[in-house]
Length: 103
Image (tube, rainbow, N blue to C red; front, top):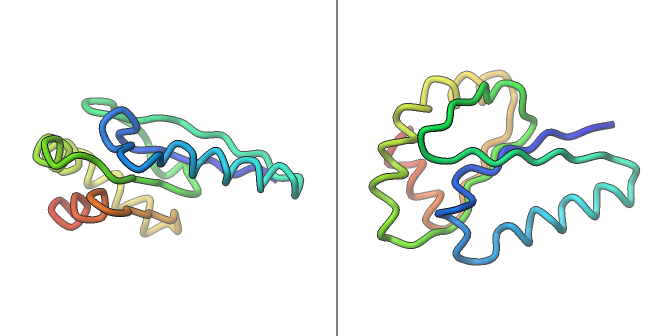
């Protein structure tokens, strides 16, 4: 079994060590024989989010919120399509707020 994960804006929204949370997810999955592939997607990068099982947006500094929200609005159609097809989308801390401001 394989899980594909998209880590949105890991360069900007990693305030609380969210990369570490994804590392723990990968290790726990490996212990159960599940392979996890993590792709980083940031500002201006396009992605077909439909290919992911899980999309994660962590916490970040307030100074990046506006630029992330603007970029999320560009990604919105693809993100919504993925969620409608069953992809899990999780935003925590400021990432959750960013999703609320753009989706």
